[in-house]
Image (tube, rainbow, N blue to C red):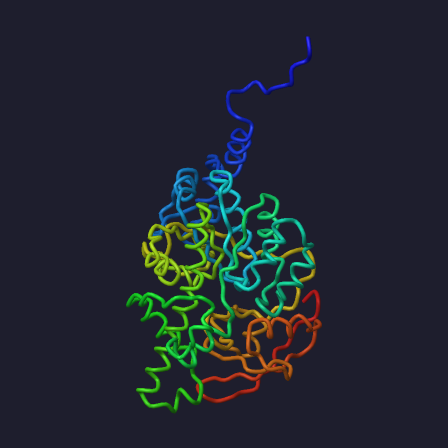
Length: 410
């Protein structure tokens, strides 16, 4: 008799068995010793223990039922602070867990504007190397943050042949809206973006507070109230256009493919279901899920039940064994125009230089700074032990500061 092909002795199809195995490895409930260790971590630091999922109030939840439920959502938005490596590691692991439960995914990325969609398609098809991808997307100029944060996610997408969708528009469109208002943008220059839904009152208030804290230019300081109000309105419109553009591509991908769309976005676009989730609801996608990483030193009062559907606790930032690249130690808040310091890390080069939250960085090493990529490029060229002159604007006046980078090993 002819030999029969070997078949595994199981009633579970091989593909499903593999997925269930991966899911078990990725999503298994913590053992007793792990739970105790995490409880000790919680008592020592933070309000969400490292390695623990919690709901929007900070109450711990079991990961398996949580991710099973999240995997069924039409859209899952994974927030980030762009310059934090562990945020991107968390995104990758969460993506892997969701993929094990629902392989029909698409990945949307804020980092890439719509015009570069053909490049992403070629990447997923296996036609480009990493260096070719970075060159053809002009990553350093278009986005600016370290591509090593995002390449593992892009590699995951290519391995599994998951569509990667360019969510963003050109920064110039957002900047023009901030300067002139949405109504002043000709239809032909809008990149197909529709008129955003009006923001929630809470979002409007939060954006106004951001503008008041960060936009302290001489023009604004000297402007009458009506001009100031118009500037605030344009700022809010610009943020709405930014959110709407990404929401439209997410909704379009969901309708066209039927896949669940995993959005890789800055936290400011997704927190408290304002921004992109609000625009998605206006487009008929009202049940998007929002997940956030939770840093160990973050204010527990932010866990108000609305911040996200779930958060994942992170431990203290660790130092890699390899030499660190030069780092200024600032966080840049999302803003339609300009480079504004949103936070300054304690003990950082920026803190020692006297940079403060709300400062607008104008010039670095004699080079104008108009986008995050400009600042990142200058910092990357800094050698250990060198000084970096900065021109900033604070409270309507320009100041000169000097950032001093330490010698290696110090």
